[in-house]
Length: 495
Image (tube, rainbow, N blue to C red; front, side, top):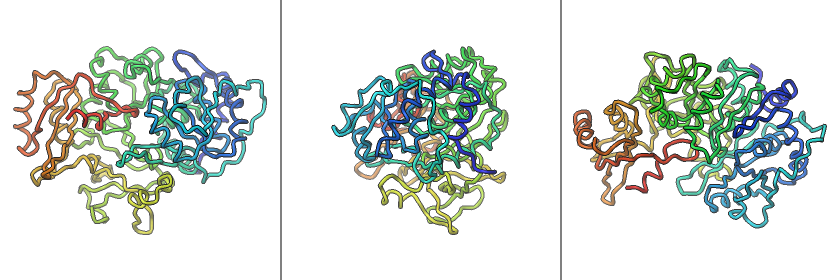
């Protein structure tokens, strides 16, 4: 299939559906014509900037989304800064990229964290809605970066993941080939923070169709807003992390979304039992598990979850098969392929994979390896491949620890814990290394503490002694990070 161009298709949709709703933000609708009027106002400023990298402060407003489009259509690179992040993190990102201009809509709170030489510009002041022409059709250099996403680093310094236009269009082409039955009348959810890469596809892909994007702001209680949008606005497409679905689980008997065509679970391992329970809420939806590291451009494998006999490991749903144009292999610790059914690390190769971390050759060398003449990105995820060719997800390499000399998969303890409770609940195991080389296992459970003894008795019946948690902590509410995943780092501060 010929490679598609995401930006050209967004412009084409704007021209074909100018009066259709492009965004619904906090109950306010914006047509494609209105969105691109704002884009036209921002583009001249962006094009006149001598720098390639433009910062954008993440706000749940139309100016933020128009800024993203303006930077992309100008052939430049955007980097998202979050007003709620620590000043030091935003400052590190700004200094690492060398940005000199930062766009914001209404909130310039990030200003206090940025170097003084950076200019912050309100895009409201750049609005020029009478402007009739813009260089929508300019030729894009595929090797230039579309955006740089900064992810957490093991040293505490964020890692920059540059995604080129070539990477983005390779992803877009493969994503389109999954065969979505979607068009200009569809209503699609965008609930992810703009600092998280799934927001890119949640924002841009609907715009290639002439469809509507419904956003969820940072200051809103996300799972309740998602519930409200799915029902009241009759959304047809929703992508969300399983953690958010977990928060909605007490309301499953009340939720009814028959117009939902697709439910995408992403960003973390999906629980089979939880998804099975939700099927009654969305009787006409196809359920799909999409997996991918940021370094391989958003998603790189897909598993269409069947109503029965879902493939899983310790309750974690399979991640399926690689996208078109990508190759995956499962490798042992010596860098050799494992046999069918055996566990190893998932490696990915293809045009969706980044060239390397931003200005960090040492870190890049650590995550890339060559095999049979091709370069692969080492995901750090443990997987196996079954006889059908489906990839079975088995957890993170760093979710394996040694206790008393035994190798322990933390996901197995979490799986057993969830099995104990009649209704879905969060269960997370945090290992705590001791000075003498030992390892304590702290189990966090989202339910009442009066179940402690019964839970421990149940675990003793199903797990060997060395896998039993050292301590059990009960939480009314689990901390989530900006990606909507359970924040394991925050949990470590509680032990």
